[in-house]
Length: 176
Length: 384
Image 1: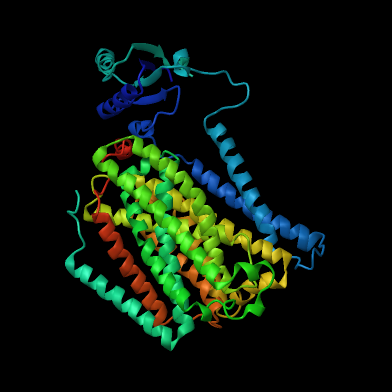
Image 2: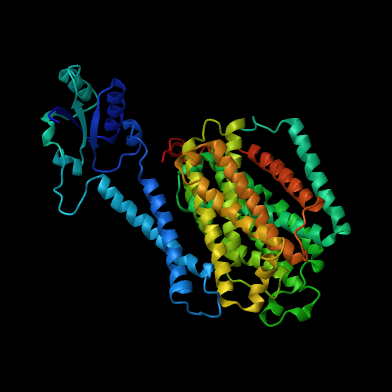
């Protein structure tokens, strides 16, 4: 990974949307986009694949519910059966609310943890921003200068045509 | 845009035939098999009133929350509310023959205490008139302001309707709760459940959303909403249907679990009949149609954005709504086994045809989108 990257910096949400569409149409490789907030429609403009997180959420939710049903059955009907109010030991309706809560807990917490893992976030990680402005009012589009066909002058002109306030080139190692 | 679309004349003729045949069959049923026909009529009347209320409730929610996204198809729930007076008329027929349906009308010894005061026939009728009058007044006022805005383009109409909507939502919450106690729960006067009102509201809104979805998809296909409604709107309607069918299950279970836990004979009597013999499969099917199927099918994003799939789920939810009303009403009218025959079919055919006829006329009476609404542009460009 010793390639160089080109960073176009914009100050308007609409500029970053239209330049992203154009750059993708031209076939350049977008490494990432940095923005101060979630821009509506940017995922479509970038052509991002749907996230896998819903699957993790769904499966962990199922596992949580199944584990809790089993645990309640084991505690109240098998390991230490206690007669409560004359109800059968294995009383499914009584188990449902707690099963529901545990399902939500598993699904929610595991989705957050999975999100941290896939985005490589952990406590104490140094904040990595391509330029400090992306935490405030700037949008940064990072392009890979992939091969000989990548003409920096031409791309720089394209970015400026879409309202780039600044275009910088960097070695990729300096990127977050 | 106004009045260009109409039902094809052959379809319209069929609908007239179906509506007249359906309700005539039910009328003869009042003499041949009064209990079942009355139960079917009550299902039809209450079902139609619920669909109408779901329409105006949805409109009121859009106004009260200042939501822009639904503006593009707001005329659909507005037109749905036109069925309200028809549903009320069907209910009036049911109450006319009420004494054979509601045991407390003649057998005054069956009830005691506060119920003896609350459940007396003149007061019951007066309350019904009051509920329906309030609903009609608010519906008329909100629709009038919305339609005036088409010409005046006055943004202040939105604020006026927001105020009306907030008042309506409070009135609706109280009156609909009481109406479902009066009209459905009092079929079994010695049974009571304080959550019954919200349980009925949950059914009203999830099935109302299913109706809105089907009508919006239909209106998009045949013309009036073709250039206005996008998959983004369907996506959000699908999310709401997903949420409220889950809400229905939540409330259903809240009612069931408390009664199961407490195990008091006068409360469990409601479920014992419905959980035995041939009722049991229907009891399970109710949960599958109203919750399990929509929950699983609507989980992925794709089904909520695909009109054909979403419409199928909406049909399943409507079947579930019918079954839910059937299980609320028919066991209480004295049927010892579930029966499905001419009276039930007549009620389904009649209500369907009547609803489509009334909806189509209401839809044609105004531009198919609220032209003067300041939020229309935002709604047309809405995306999730």
